Image (cartoon, rainbow, N blue to C red; front, side, top):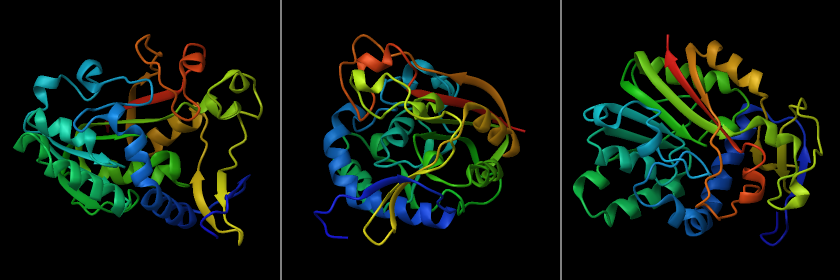
Length: 275
């Protein structure tokens, strides 16, 4: 595809292999722009669950902040490892995993400029979330803020891998686009407030080049699908958090905005415990 040619947006099937290849390529190409556009909001060492700005320092979805010290924590789809860097500053021992080499280069860039050793003390691993390169029971906790799960064709495979590397009773907390958002146009203004598609249509959203090769893939799961996936992955769901849009947040981020955020949920956070 010509660099200046816009990809075609469509809805069609996409396999796990095609989805993974598209995600790696998209994030490698767009990591610089993403970090430039959203880096200030995400911070260098802040744990934000989504565009609403819900902060783990306040939400404590992984457990009491004071109890994170010494815990071995896996972050999946870590991007530039901002969340892991915050965890390290609390005394945890995080590992930040991402599919994108370029995103992890940004993690190294931020770590090189970290003000403290704790803020920079995060191990980085480039790997696919569906084939985690760790031994069984290697981690106490796991987390993912919009990482991996929205972009894979087989989320149960990822969940089972996370369950495998967690110790029994360990928490896995992950955030994804709220399923109801798939029924609405991905627009931050009034045009994004009218239902435009079936909530029950699970056909993946695909951007493809002129040859039909996928360059971006995102998979829709209903709320019920996500709950069933969690159970099939070997977890017990203990909470489902739908962050409300705070008054202080005036930013627009893709289809997220104060206008929409005050009316419909944009993010769903699943708090799960390994059975």
